[in-house]
Length: 522
Ligand SMILES: Nc1ncnc2c1ncn2[C@@H]1O[C@H](COP(=O)(O)OP(=O)(O)OP(=O)(O)O)[C@@H](O)[C@H]1O
Image (cartoon, helix red, strand yellow):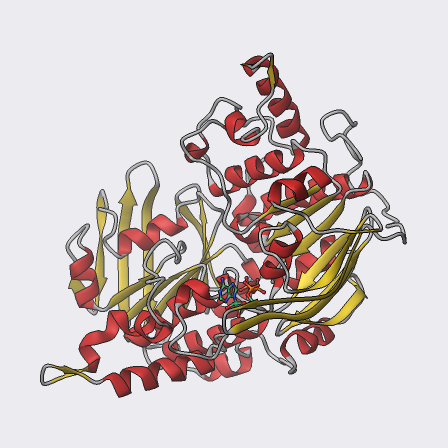
């Protein structure tokens, strides 16, 4: 079992030859939640030193599977062999002690504690009952340095760190134990390009030391980059296992995951070229600044147009959307919708003018977790379902059903309570709410984070359809491919300034990446 604090720095790209012996074998795993069969017979084998990718649509059962592995859930049936022995971990601590570390989508850190306190939470270093703060900080510093983040101070409060920084702390916590298997559930969702590179460097280093990694992501290009083998889940069942990550064709993976072929993930350019591009100006932003965050932003969006903002986390892209929406009060500048100037810092005025914002933090900002799907979708459009003092429930539910079908929300139920749905499906529900609301200007912040490839194609199509119906759309995304594939025009935001603007058809991915990253340390 490697001790990560003591080993030398691993090479950047070690030639990995995962062994053929089996570290973990899960066979016929079944898990039911009252009426829902989340897993109906899942198999998985993981070898030491390999990066094993788990693929599947939203709701396929990936998170349930790893919760069983980390002993948060007890399976109803099936066997788990760990290092050749049939095993049932009594509780999550037993799994951790056996060498299984899990980093969930929702990080379970305590914001009010320091980095070091979080890393050693539950297994504090002490001698004779006295906590050894100096030794703890030293050890935490070593682990953070190994993770490429020596700049994070062990004494800093975790709540003050960025999402990427918090993820590093979670990783440090996982590695503060001796670990044979590291499970990462969509780790890249909160990360920028450079940060993903760093994460991959760390993963390769660990794999080179014999640590096995289970890696969950909806981004297929990442799976190619980092994965050795792939297991695909569909509707709670393993449909393929042991596929080579580097060479299995994307079309095959998509077919396995969704049961269908998806020819075009993005709306086709040819169709876009036929669209009128000379619609009237809907949104006009002039010289907009937010002191200390961004300055002098000019942005014009016509009816039927999709404008993409590409930039790193912290570049100011999210704050630009929030300021247009009035959730932040601009220090200078104007926002005009259909020729009408909006009051600064007034969300009500923005909403009345027809601006809608689908925020990045969808879960914390607005899901009614103990309400059914249809109520979550219609909540911002109730006026349109009221007639003579009555709510037209039939129409409300029919609209919700239409969106649930077209976004492929699983389960296909409009009465399911949102709390019990998988992360990606919850996101689809919030997006459906905004798609229903019928805005003049739709501001979308990371619209496909955590959403599977099939649903992405649907979301892109719906956004394009909305634009075609005359809506002005602004999209923020960390994924340059998404910005280029979806938008007509791209603005690159760096350190609070728009540094470049181009038609999406006239700029390529590597140029946008260069512009986004310029001046950022490698
Ligand atoms: N506590 C629960 N109660 C009821 N149903 C649940 C519960 N947890 C999960 N499910 C259901 O089990 C199924 C599998 O969910 P799971 O979270 O494992 O999917 P996933 O593959 O991780 O999806 P995503 O990519 O969206 O994160 C879903 O249909 C979900 O609604």
